[in-house]
Length: 353
Image (spheres, rainbow, N blue to C red):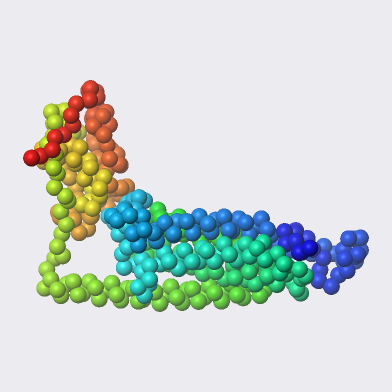
């Protein structure tokens, strides 16, 4: 049958099987430089997580999840939504969304990790290293590919931190998968041929990331210059939040008085659907009395610097009595925050004519 490849020890190449079994002059040779079947299954499992995530992002990007579908906003701070991060200029390379090569890379890791299982007839016999050729070339491929993925993940996280200045959970999930794959693969005494292949691939990834950074930086600078010239140097058109279409109920207006006493403020962004829902819950009259702070850079009356100074964790966020409460709040929750006892349910708002 095919030679097993989940083995902690194997005789040195050239030693006789009898010597190895009898414990003679032949010494047990630790095969810790090669991936075992358990190692390969672990790599395939983690790569599957990355594959599913990037496939979901690609499906969303190309409208396969339905028209107008929005990504769950996992951007925990800054003034940019996840959709803006994953559809902005830094998410592309030469016109191709980076989620596409990312998805293909994860699929290739799965293939390289599992190919010895799928092609068991190719594992008969061993090479000079003591393992079958299919195990050798697939491990070489995994070393090179996972290191390259870690390099690109480092590049993308750097762009996220220093260029976009946002913290997108989707990006962190993918980066965590890539870094784990590389660390797990390289956390062993790899054979010299594998190390050479891996380092060569890593060097090419560094070069590729540099080319993409330079190209994208140029494209962004050109786009900014064209916008500036097209507007004659005028400020870019700012976006106002959608109009509030509900009236405030008596219950809400009573709540507003307590919010005013608590020096309450609401931080949000014009593109934030939860912010709009919160305003609709309170109604137009209430929102005329509650200070609303626009955190988006391109939002009307933007106070982005203030939002950054206060390290607003997400949108909407309420500041009540100097304490921050992220997320959309129900009337009961707001009444509790300001010390009001929740009353029996009454109509919250009515539609404006």
